[in-house]
Image 1 (spheres, one colour):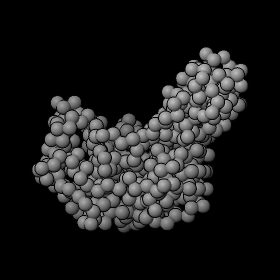
Image 2: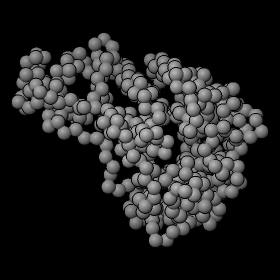
Image 3: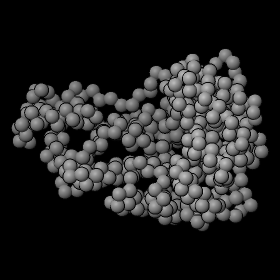
Image 4: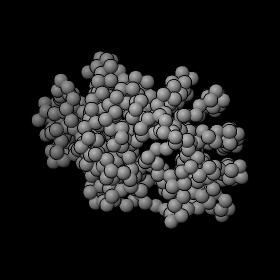
Length: 444
């Protein structure tokens, strides 16, 4: 091995931590973050794609055996390679699971200013015949494709207005899929202004999770997500959140960051940390936002998270920013166009839920008898591959995947410059979390 010439990943991020320690992460290889000692950092810095292993050993004063062991470890996640052939996430030939956004209803009891649903407040929901056809179509596809997982995100509108309609469907589909070894997961994407003892009991019995929309603490939520008649929702949502937590029902938060709630983002961050709830911050789509204030408030929020990490809060398992995938990475932003899409109340299948109600977009129907659901996805719209030359050459292309293809501007995410500021910061916080853990276990 001494004559081999190692090279660093072209997508490598190498940044300082504390007490001479650094961290390295290959932004094109999942779960590659590694804490480096000063000596290991010296070795990695000496790797330039031109210098042999023997010369690096001489330069750093390490034995060949010790250096080879270190290079072997770094090669496991392609931080370095000796053949200079670095991989990146690629689209598999076929899906192993399906992930659908189910538009259960157009009915909603809130009046959020940024809602994208064009048919909002039309009272129609998915009828029994369509739900039955959906069940049969899923079973047919799982059987034919030998799929191992199906996930439904029951959304709307407000899906909990339709709870009784789905109460029988969920256990029925899970039972029908069990003989094929297929797992069925369900979550309600809800504003959580509706929560009954019946819903709680059902969620516990059938392993239902909740994705809750919350845009701020107190006045910020009340302004951004009011009831249709204008009254606020925070107190009710806060009460219902704590009910779910008390019952140990899985729950996560999604916050749409917009001009109305920017000032309250640091306070919301602390509130969610105190509740120890996973949360995701998404930037509003199709609406202008104050870029300077956005960055300012995000940095203030990440400062809150940094302080929480020092006190033992689990940043890596609790926070996500937009569609960024700093740990898992990805070949595209979401399941749309590959292993999923959105199914409307009438049974039409769309590339994305923002296309629901848009007759100009290509769609199929679950009532089509000559194609299964995977074929519907394959034959539908495909927008995820339209990426700019800048994106294709970017170090972070597997982290942000150019953002949501529906909202790209000139084939890139409109928040591209912000991502270049935030992605390294997210890795910094992950590394600080890991560094703290290593210190606590006396591994440094």
